[in-house]
Length: 301
Image 1: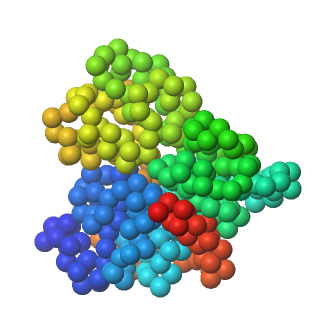
Image 2: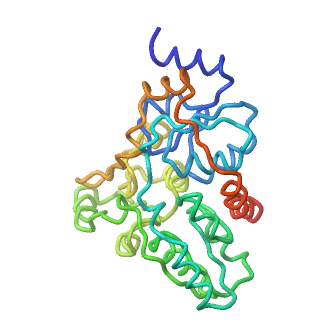
Image 3: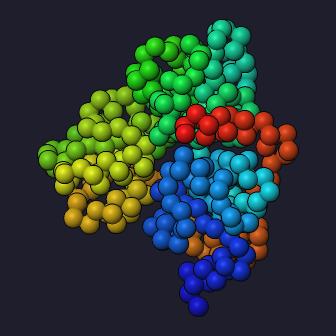
């Protein structure tokens, strides 16, 4: 029996479902029941009938799934798969901002730890952030942890006053403008599609800016045949699978999240066999971090 066959067999026996982010390896996306970006996966997790969720993503995603499904077992194929940006804010700074600004909403990107969520008013994803920030009654917005996404949203919601945190995604932050221009010189007909976690200079030379799912959707519906993709290279698999006649290019230094790539078929099989790497959160942490997530799901309807 192959590893994939073993996984499928155990999945049935254990009443398990596999969720995977677009940035994980192609072979992991192939075995997943649901594949998507953070927002899609957080929504899907709520309505699942299966008792066990195997989350092929980084730690904050597993935490969010557990927070929204406290009675279910959430397993992470690799407990070391983390997101550096998820830790790039702190309670002390948040409190300082609350003391400094009246009528302040702390808006927390879902790419953050459960602990950070407990200090926030509402969560957002790159796909729904603009809609949610517009819906908030507050004038002042302290957006954590990602500065690049914050600036992108602020430009679209000029009626709000944004206060910026200094966090960033190392993968998107280090996209090289010169490499994007070099790719454009090689493929002049290609459109540049970028994730809003990229710096402003990258977004300025892009034809489309959107979430991972937004990029996939745009490329699929577009009449154009060539695209330069400015986000993590795991998305290539879905893009090529859905659009076999189109061409997708990445910068010479390919954007790779090594944490996402830690997840392998063998590790998925291992947690299904053993039940190891279960996500555990204290009741207090679960309840407090659930509030901003629920507010997100409510406002994003």
